[in-house]
Length: 334
Image (cartoon, rainbow, N blue to C red; front, side):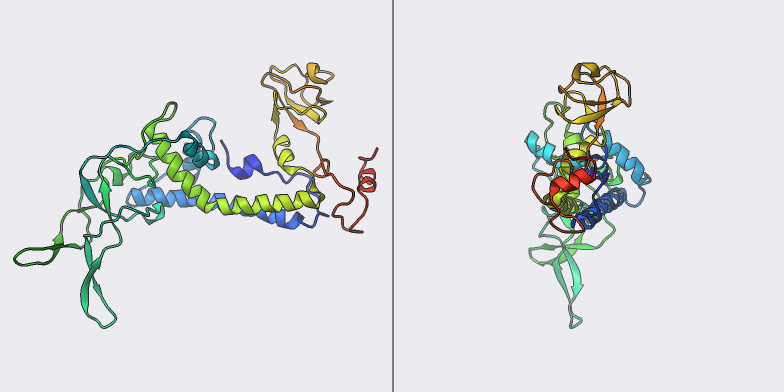
């Protein structure tokens, strides 16, 4: 499955007289860039978890996300995960202290308050403060924010201690801060957090949650801006682009809209002559008389302003030119 930009956005035949034309165009470009940046970010995530030895390309990462769950795109991961309502795994009574050198994974909870580092204050005095980068990892319960698309990364298998110097406070006859030798470099296991549900493995659920959350955080705002710009474009007389953004790329049989003009793209097993076509050949134009069946596809012969409803629209000269006159000028009048 593809990116949101490829699957959901079409800039075909946009009306440059619409006052929201440029903002819609810019918003679409922002979505495209946000997705490019997001795949770069995922490479950074995996490189941190592999201690700098990760060697897959952004294109390979994208392909691996696309094949994680058949028919599911990254931009759909989080919504689908939430719909499944998977249960958290049951943990053991054991904890493992993990030096969090994976900042791009954005792990926000589960930090130890009992491990310290030496720190010099503004007066030059040295003291001990709670470390802000040591996880108290609950073995067996997993870590929801960690993306396990690749389960062979070093952070999931290493048993090595961290090279950083940490301290713990030991009370007793001679209380004080002593070097802690129990902080590890990694989790020592693949930190899967969710119980499998019918049709989905715990590995798939982990990736859907971790990658889906990050996608919504990093790309979601750009998509929201695009959707707002699209609404403004439509309100300004741009037609129903939310429909055209799909039909320009091909509508599957079974989803044709009666009364809409189409051009056969892939005939497949669809009998297009049953729903208004003169024949079943690619390139044939027809007005749909039914929704169709089979596995054929067609593209719609639509203009961005075709579905506009109103008496005036945004137009360059003059601003309130009657809609019927505009349609007639463009060959759409009755």
